[in-house]
Length: 218
Image (cartoon, rainbow, N blue to C red; front, side, top):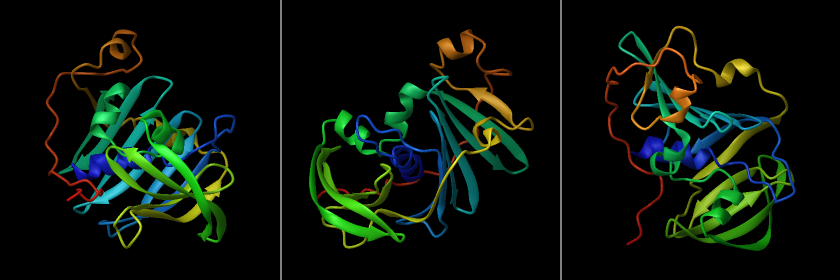
């Protein structure tokens, strides 16, 4: 489940202080274990991740307004949009994207200095107690995490290679019209309210298992 866990990690890549608003943005991120950079887009309460794994492009969209987590998969000539309830995201995607996520899940944070990443100044903050993990993140003045390093790891778990703040096109956060939409179990109220159209009970094709980028503690 490395890919799914990785996406969850990225979906909290944007950390604001409590009174701070995370900007809309586009980022390219180098992620340990992946040859190609990950692309992340954020607009309001919507986040999109595009990542290549095993030669296949996979896309994940978290829509907090509608309470949905969407996985777009195109393989073997078939295009499928798998729809999960967003409250399953922590189980499917257990890595954080922002410091607020670390705090909300019981991590302790300690400022330890400053650094530079991708040509930008950032604050170094030590974290402990997130999913029994510890490490250091580097956060810029707008609240974006530019780098994360797990304790005991010599190289970063991820680092931002390019970052641009600004409005993102709404097309990045919806299911394309040529994708078949499949609602997975427990979608519940979202489907009942008609928030998703064309849902059916067809079983999705299985993806190859992937591992978490977090190194297991010995």
